Amino acid sequence: MDPSERDAVFAHEALNKSKPDYKVLIEIACTRTSQEILAIKGSYQFLYKHSLDEDLASKTNSDIRKLLVAIVSAYRYDGDEFDESVAHSEANILHHAIQNKVFNHDEIIRILSTRSKKQLCVTFNAFRNIYGTTITKGLLSNPIDDDDDEYLGALRTTIRCIKYPQRYFAKVLHHAMNDLISEENALSRVIITRAEKDLSEIKDLYFKRNNVSIDDSVARNISGNYKIFLLALLGNNSL
Image 1: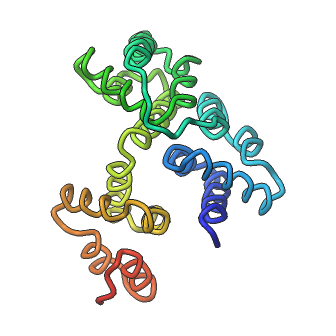
Image 2: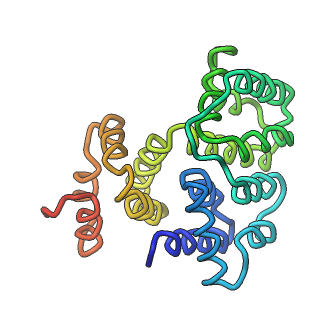
């Protein structure tokens, strides 16, 4: 199975849970390149005879649907060019929306779904420099209800996946190792999908966070062929 088919399967599984797992969908949308997302959507259509965009629209609801459809449908510029004046302007727009608790503001979704990752990182830095706090901390404040709280969680996940995906994945591994019963799929998903990309950096960040390597965590807490499989992907063939 090639990477686009694998990610299409992950997306389909996430959408068809009793409660769709929006974090997996955000991971895919925000940590793959625009070309990779196009390939994933093509594989999804081939495997399931539905478009990913249509299934997102039909299987999610409320503001999360609006966010997910936008970040999956957009075609981002993947280069390194950025505009400081745009970053400052959009940092102000984001702050105004957050201060007024209009978290589903069209401008928030437009900025997060259409700007390049480099441009967004510059905008997030501008937000911190101007307002003295990170945008994710700003989004922690006083949700109105449970649906609002879930949507804010989706926004924070989107920002973390764009800003520093390796740190985000290290955190996913940390939570997975602490709850293997419900998070086993997250453990294998991260290791499998990042094995040929940035797994080395993720492993370093995991060690710094936990003072133990992910290899040792897997070796101590998992057994059998599954352990052998994961350790091989981690580049550790010892038992």
